[in-house]
Image 1 (tube, rainbow, N blue to C red):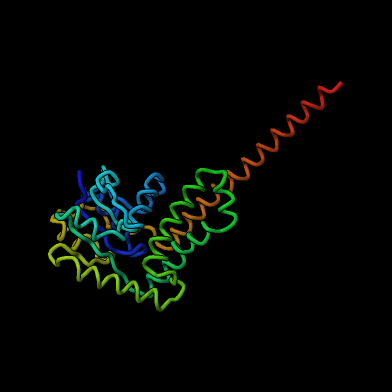
Image 2: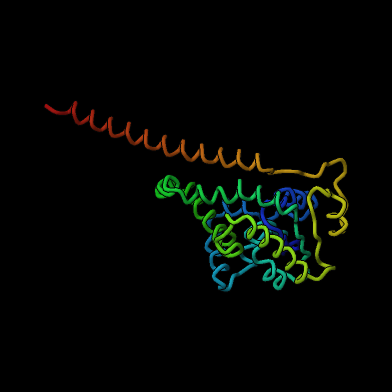
Length: 250
């Protein structure tokens, strides 16, 4: 199995919807940033790629037929070189709406993951440690590399977004590229991939900003509950041991 579809679009351009759509069309599993959380061992390889070191793409994408979203999009040119027969999809959306969505979701998560509370929890809990490592890696690839550490400057971030999209259009042969908005549905996507649209199955529209924030809040609540619960258990254990010691005193 090898990559047949390479997503070159930024996160928050409908990449989760595209992931699910591609899988429904038979191009799955599809790699996505969510896969990094499920496979934290991949972070080291993405870090190596960001440093410009050689990466074994076959090993990293073993079992996958497509990739969309970060971190794969950051290396679309390397992936095209390795998989020359793959087709490329550039997901786009209104730049102003993209910025607002990205600012309130993925970049907000990166800020939370770098907070003192999260850093403290990551020292003791594998779940939080994985989230922190993945968020840090994504931050290095996007906030630092793509936006030069200036994502908070709205104008410059939007200019970088537009410049990236234009660069993809220039560098990918037109016959291998689909510039696509997920609101267009099955039609353009299925035509581009030469497949039939699923019968009686609506195009997936997933992971809007509200859903993203709710998902992150759920993960945070679980992480906090584990921290609090773990601390409570330790406290109870200590109380038990102290009480046992006290009862054994003559």
